Length: 340
Image (cartoon, rainbow, N blue to C red):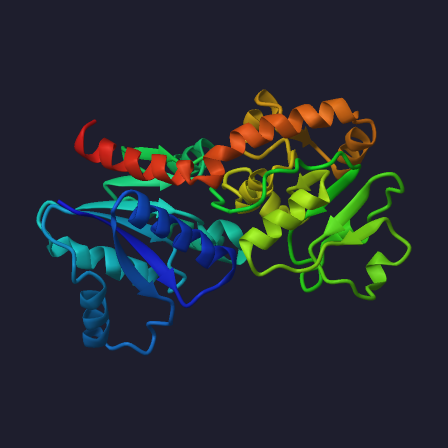
């Protein structure tokens, strides 16, 4: 019996990075076998072309194996369905669907497709979901897969200098594209006592003029970003203004949470995200209901309180920097299929 994990190529950003990280950990640490999937539209494929394409992807799969299918592939639901169906010819094969994102919940225009996705998810022998909130939401809408594994958090296996701890600063670091994607809370920043540091190159932006905003620069490398955040000090801010994304964050695991914690920064997160209780219980940062509340808490924070959070974060971050969340969920999935 072999265990395989799919890996997505031909796509960048957080989407590609997350799948490639999981596959890398599975391959190097657990000796799982990779099934590479390239992102491109299947609309131009004839049925024979698609079959040949799928045969090539699963050439190393045998009867009785386990395939962990990272979803979505962003090739469309039809491709994902075709891939899963193509595995049906293998006797005793077990399918694990590792759900990174649920596309209909990310775009209000696609919400009508949710039933199709859940019907597809029900073809799995086991499903890996980002949170209990997501599991409860999908089960209320028809998910019937009996065996589930909950991810909880994203890893961020960075290699950075940990010698110097983050410094106490009344600063919130926001790691996201604030130039091409407008963020109302950034544009409306009004605190004179708490600084907002954004991942953008220094420039003349109308929304930043005369405001307490600092520019960290833009980073295409995870190590460089984590190092810059650690040197910046203060807090890592996980936030969104869009109502659709606010609702989505209540159920999903956010990659940026892992980025901040791996860098060693205490975090500021909405009270509504799935891991807010973990942040409170382990004193890894602040959980708030508004940006205004966050600014007030940071303004009144003492250096002693901050340093205690930094110590707690650095201890917890060993899990994230060393890929333990991925290793646990990938191992738990196999145990549930073959032992439980």
